Image (cartoon, rainbow over all chains, first blue to last red):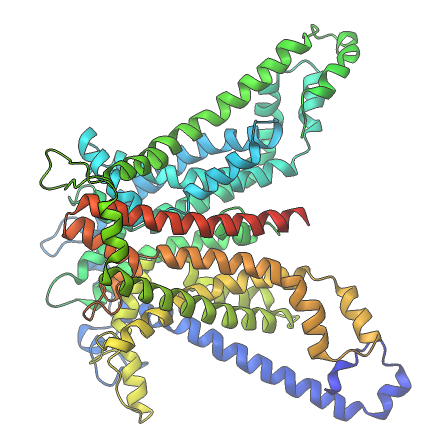
Length: 303
Length: 316
């Protein structure tokens, strides 16, 4: 191909000889690439746009055949239905959203409180069989949830944790702790251990050195890690649907999934609920976009 | 990292400073104590919520316990295991799972890498493009499943509507025996192509520029550069991403549950969906536990593979 010769080697005179042909070749290819990327982006984003569009459509436009892309009646009724019950008062969906906030928040807090000190200890000390311990911790995160939920279900039934928020918080914390440890260990590794050594020379104990010097430096990392843990708990479905049943405990994912249980499905409501549910995730994900690679690989890959 | 060894050698310095000299032994012990105190709460939670349940499942897998019947659990030895391994039903689900995992992961890898390659060649708007492409990955499988179910509806779904206006025939996306599995693969691909793209992009941008410059001085062709520079350098990271996706796809439950509920018939029943049916609809807790333990074994093998490659990548 003509473009294979880089600008770096092409000297001025050479450029004068065949500028048009090569320039055009490069431009044409570039246009093709941009076009391809645009098409792919549209395909990837279309479902999201369609979801947003459906959430603001009048019901008869939602089911229109052929589908209406632009000329539809705009309404915010579906969003009202998400939060307000048909007879007035709070809807079950809004209660589910509140439950989700409580469960995701509490489990993230617990996972952070347990995971950050552990990550620091794994980073700083010569723990026995450290690598094995770390790999064991990560491998618990890969267990199939459908399999784990069977004994957890029996266990919870025995101790009365079934259909409680505490039960969900504990299991979510358990699957966020491995992630928190792996993610945070990377952040702790980046803070030189010499800071603590220096502080200890000044008479601080190891614990004080961690608390007063290392921890403040870790705060951005802790925030990013907590945001990911929050997203994972917020989106989780399998444990939520098997371990909870009452409306006062149920989180948003099973509640939204429950909307399609009946014979007729109000897709406008489903779309509006999905938008309300997904919006905070997208905002949070945007905030931690710098750490996305580490976050989505559970802290295993860092670039 | 900072072991206690250098601390003891710093002893004279510490004596000279105003602080009371800490005896090396007790300092070392307190470090160890601190390590235990800091790691054990997290480990205890994992033991209680991950290891203990699995051990319980392991025990149950040798019994004929049923969660609804309750009462006595009789020891049946390896009966549950032989029943599962010999079951035609399970073989069929294993095949479905294999088709789904291989199909979805292959499609995601090819598409994801292609998109990453195209983005890495752009100089402007890279951040915006990446952000836009990543949206599907951040959505909950529940939202993704529900929404595709709506779009793929045979009567009023927008996909068939678009096919119709293009003059093409209607497709029974979620209700046809063959097409349902294809739909499942397509939806999973839609959601997780960004994952491969993200990691491939991280690998592509990490390839040192001077390698390409050296290659272009040698007048190497573009394909040659791709084959000898780009691919070998990105491959280790890409392999991690592929294995990660394979494990996730093998465990997948929520998308199947929402999108097709295993139907029509059993055409989209993966292993994890079948376990759910045995455990929560058939209430054969003992059998389901054995089934689950077998799945855990597969996951452990895959995870070991994954961790081994990860280790290799970190050492390089």
